[in-house]
Image (cartoon, rainbow, N blue to C red; front, side, top):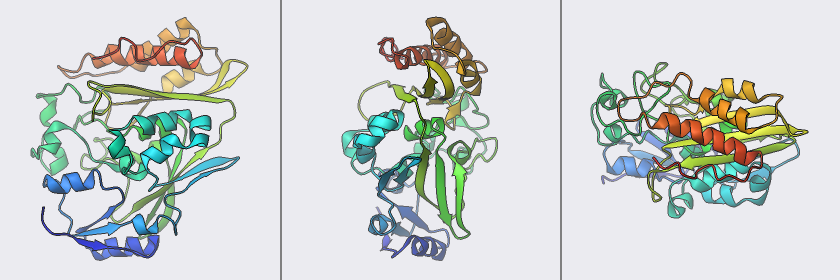
Length: 337
């Protein structure tokens, strides 16, 4: 790996300034589990790494701050800390479970929340440096190639799937992301942070050049019951084949509000608004869960080798709903691809 310069900014504003000064050849780094791997594989080539670690305490970037109205999580909080935090696990179980399911224990100890949300695609063709859309080319090789793990929703023209486990959970929880950049601060809803290929095929989110994801805020939700279920093709170091984040606000055993977001099936966390509307005002029963599962795959457009994802999603949504409603079923049972 070629030599890299390291910059240690004194504040978040200083970090943004150093990124600007790099003229497109500087990159912000927290845990570095994705960026350093991309540099080693010649998929990224910054000259300067702007380390955010020194800012963790001074700017609160590694803080988890629960409150009566909201939860704030700094972008540099590791996935391991997030998954083990007692109040997160108690009040926002879906987020703790999602963070705790990512990658391996070793990676979760260094990987940050912001890094997990902003990581680049893990499509085989992208990681092998094929001249695809993500590398400035004019085709998606997975469209007619090896597409077992690619998108069944929202794919054209690129069929990558978003690799983050935390992202579906935060979209389901209606979280907000605070971004800090040369133009100051802005806050965007989690669901508006991620970008479909049809909007801009070269990017996966709305971060502008030299902008940093500083922290995430999750609103309190009385009566919230939530969970994250994920199906893997193997247990070690793999991303979701399919996953579902469920966040239900219950009142008298009826769903007052539902957040239903799929992972592993689209270039963005795939919110299933039709299922959310179906659940609103109703008690979760076997028949309703089955209907929700069928509706969750409405409009799926699988590729030749990933059609198995359609029944996998349908059954995972059904089982996870029943599990969350208290049936005791394991949502992942008999769901291996």
